[in-house]
Length: 229
Image (cartoon, rainbow, N blue to C red):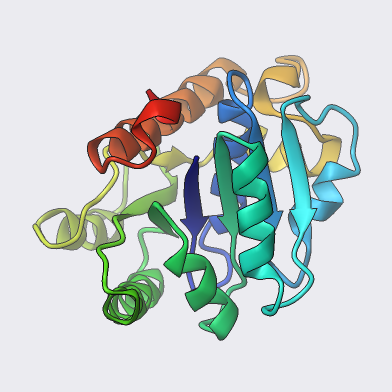
């Protein structure tokens, strides 16, 4: 069982959207539990809409006191557990990170997001010291332009990509109409209609590339080799 946690202290970083994209894509072939630990409960709301993948379950976190039990229970019944954390550093955040096989740090190519991502990485390293083990992590750029990136966006992304101490996903989550549509119509990308959203096939390819890279990283880091292979 692999536990993948999405963490960023800044709102609007694409954290929840990225977690949902990954969960739905993995659920095409594996059992997945998505734990909604965001106080706004966006994934719990999404789960009430039609079209949720059959292999995907959504658990609403009750409190910081229950998060460890929720992760343990999900880990026992599913091949993947994905945790969408609240947008602030907290004891709940540290608890969830301590149980993770991988932490994904989503961020937009903006300076404010960059500072928030650095804060998460520093907190993550403190958590590693507390649990006395290495917790793999990687930065994920979200809401990126497919073409014609701004000078600021290129500068921010290059700062992270040039830093060997900070792993960065090769895949970026692009700015796509289909990703926004998930929260209004429900279901996953593969259940949307090309008549309703633009460039659906490109969004599906983008999601598939992201999921494949996550699985590759988990394999490389030795997270539950039997179940991920």
